[in-house]
Image (cartoon, rainbow, N blue to C red; front, side):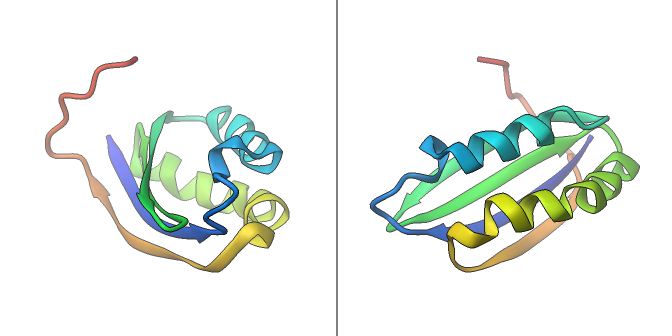
Length: 99
């Protein structure tokens, strides 16, 4: 399994996960080959950390290419600053359970 960790910022008065744009993004994201799930953490003041899990590194790379236009159309217009890629890599431990 491989992971992508990003930091994003949006207007604090409009929680991103409640927007139509986020829901559209997430539907398309979740339909990609190898998608294993995401965790979106609200760390306050409109800042979010996202962990997205992929079955393989190849799935992760293909998703980045496939989602570029979707991100430009849905999430980027709502961001108050550019997304920051914090890192990618193999998952070396996980005890996450599906909720």
